[in-house]
Image 1: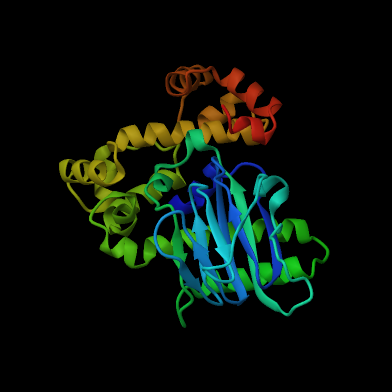
Image 2: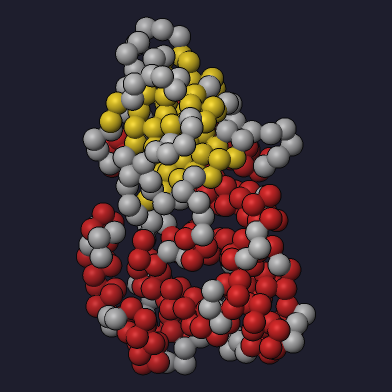
Length: 317
């Protein structure tokens, strides 16, 4: 798996939610802040306005994609002057699609595709911490074609569910998230970045080293071997990797191995010895010691608690 694919596998917990919403003017809805989540809105038809907590309202048109990586609150309306109604429930539980609209008989003024993802806030990949509160990807001819295709397919599947719809929608939602992140990091923001993960992914050498680590975490990587992958000397690679990624190469490898082990404990019933081998530890005992140092809990207890708590409770731990 490559870096962005791994980020999504690590960050999401539970099933994503989505809804296709038809709105009649006047309408306005304020979405509350939901820690431990990420949300999106896509304008499928018509127009609308994003009303952020700070700053001027933003006009939105067909094809615009909004992504809120940190679950911060925001409002949307048919006009900047339309009063907004507070949504007093968790949108990912039972609030998706509950938009207020005073007119129920008028023509549809906007069609939105909205949804969100539950995240594990305690073990999110550091890539996510560098994302802004809002990612706005305006619709532009010829740009983000894969993202547009995913949006079209997802909208059609939600509007006309057929056999296998649950699996198809869930997969398309993960695909949508991947394309949003790819568009952000490969776009102007990544090219103009002077540091951090955006620059790490844009740097051919550091990106190659990260890709190697993520594709084979069990390999006994050395700084010299990774430097060779990056086309840099050992010292130069170590300095550049540490500056962009935020931790030295071997420290990142350890962190990623343990994060992967934690995900495997949550999502599978594989024995600890097998998980240890898959992430580069020679024994269950070696993994247990490293895991306890990082997570401050033994693997067995971590797995029992992860399997016994519902997703909403896990977000509180």
